[in-house]
Image 1: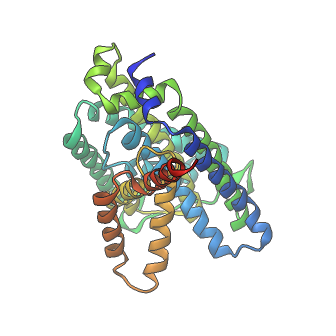
Image 2: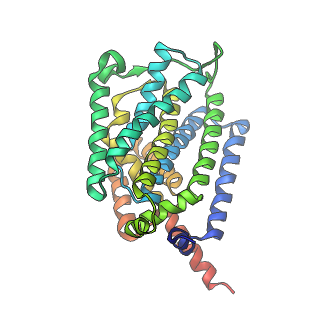
Image 3: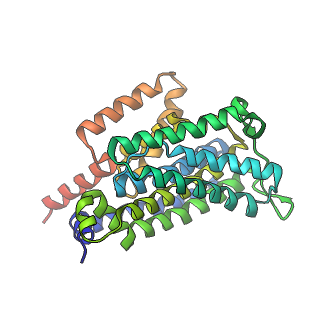
Length: 330
């Protein structure tokens, strides 16, 4: 048994995880049934946005929560895939069997050299180099107007399948995003609970000890970086196909900061934490923005309260509360 296995066993709360996964399964089932029960289209649009950003936050959690790498440029891969969908759709094909996988592949390929350079640093320096790479992507998106549209953004062609338009209705796209999210969430869960995922947790807890045990820590960190970028690319491709538009703001550092806040508020290191965080942040943004333009102030206060009072986020508070209640039981 490896040190990583021991660490995970000490920290694991299987009963609570099972309950959380039961709740998540019920939520997915409710989302699937809601359109048949008369869900309004604006609510469908809100759920689509929550699912897309939940997937983006889950991909960042592979780095932050499981590997202990704080990336401040994760949205770069979100935006790269989004722009790739538009460029491929305009110049090659609008077929979703071409645009979607190629866009994700582009994000994955870009992650390899960026990750290879970034993982040679740690802590604050890793954060800053990922921020620097993300700003380079932002500058390219902002300045390369013949390809990206510059500050005006890019109109993304609608998806087709063998020449026929698909996903044209809000409801059809809703089910498409829900299906992709469910598959990706299952894949990510399989990854973080596998031997590979347990090794990442070991690296997060004690990198020198993992080196001493013979693990190639840099290789594992690079793999985690690429995995996170790949799923961020899936989220970016979905976002572009949904909005049929992509702009430089999608790769700006503010987008990366927002996703980082989602993960930390929900609970880094807990699988469902980023989903909780993304839901809360987007609902707060939607609700508060209709009353005041200072909704970010409320979000900032919530972030400060959670960081100072509950560093494990909302999911951590739920787990602690449940453990406390079970401890008082017979």
